[in-house]
Image (cartoon, rainbow, N blue to C red; front, side, top):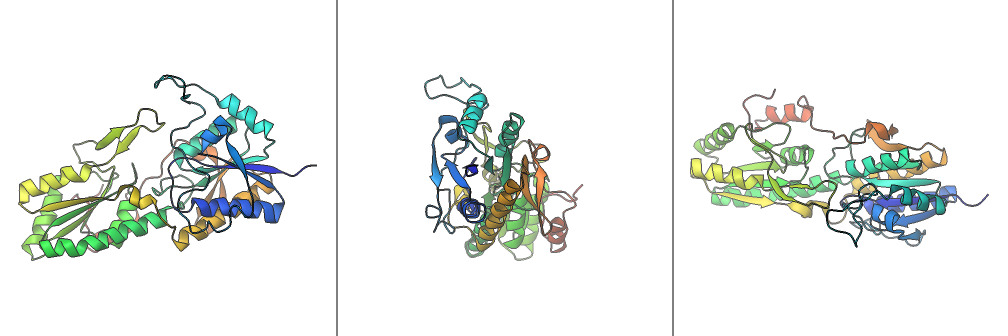
Length: 366
């Protein structure tokens, strides 16, 4: 019987901690289980276009503290809706059978898919075609079902919190309202936790559509009592009680074509025009996804990776590794596919924030 062989890919957008996971999977596969490891280049595109390399102990050494991913990523390549290079822009084809044939030709015993909800959905669809899949939860949005935390989130939260910390001084010096817009898509975890940690006066998240009159009331009240500046943490997916999310652009050839962003400018305009208080907007964008991962994300990524290899060794497939409480668990992919984990309105963090007079842009949360 020959060596067992696994494949690994990083789908979706990059984020801090991916290399920690690649390292953890590769080293534990080789050191503990004597397996071979193939890294597919640029996410599912590597599986589609048959681009890969063998990962060794040496090739993954020294990457624990590096951001990004050494095998590349791609948030457009989907085996079930693939746009070939030589076809028209709007032509998409299903090449999943071709991918499964390549999977078989390589003699893979398992495929480790690292990514967010889009990656897990594709992984689940490949699972239904016969692939033996184990998923690992990566996203700065922390919006995956089945896990309390995702690696990449802690680093993004630290970056966003530091940004909020830094705008305090300029806001106070110039008596301005500073709006710091962070990522998160439809989930407000990042804005909420960074906003609370950074001492934001108002936190606006998608789960709680804001009332502009309440936002204005808070800003005016602070100004009236001598606090002539305000800090507002804004999630990119935020919307008003009578509005819609602000779309920055549409990426037609992406499985998730809507790119949110820019809502802070509309809010700033309203505040300036109705209060006369000068506003400034800071949109963090991809800064949140770059750079070296925090120690927490390095530890979490390593633990996720080792648990994934334990599941592979035991023949436990078609699941995603999740952290629930203090335990690493195997979550069936069916429970993750096509779902998003949003901030619950009864979150203890919301209650704690309101207790210290942080506003969520509404008089009452329902």
